[in-house]
View 1 (cartoon, one colour):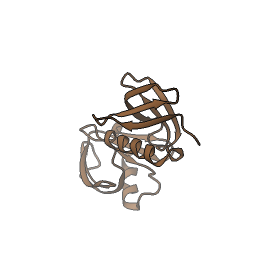
View 2: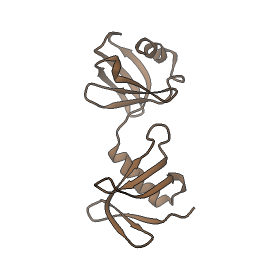
View 3: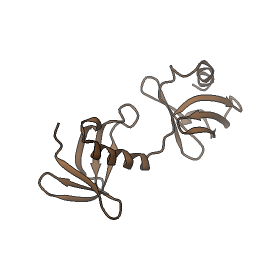
View 4: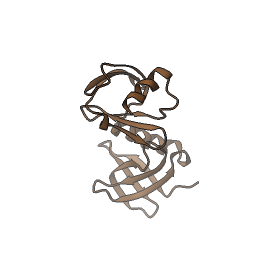
Length: 155
């Protein structure tokens, strides 16, 4: 698949997108259309005011250099640890402290209320802590038995 733009970084480390007709767009940002369900599909390249200047159907279709620039930019902007195991909770009443293992290491956070656990899709959960950090459980049906038992008490 051919792409209809070029992407690079300028001296200020901002992404610069040049369209096929030569238009230069400085300081563009990639935005995922479906960050949880399809993180590598549907990427919009937008200007600071939100205007879309390019659309990417699939990251895998891009040349490696452009894909790397976009992946680096997304990684720097997004922070959503994925919970892989729930070790313990201090209480089944809220607020309570959860001790979890994530794809970024072990941590603890305070769950203010059960309303801070949201279902997203069939088996995904988004959990917001008391600081507004969102943790993702990609599929609550494949977590270990102990973690699932804890989740069942809150859902």
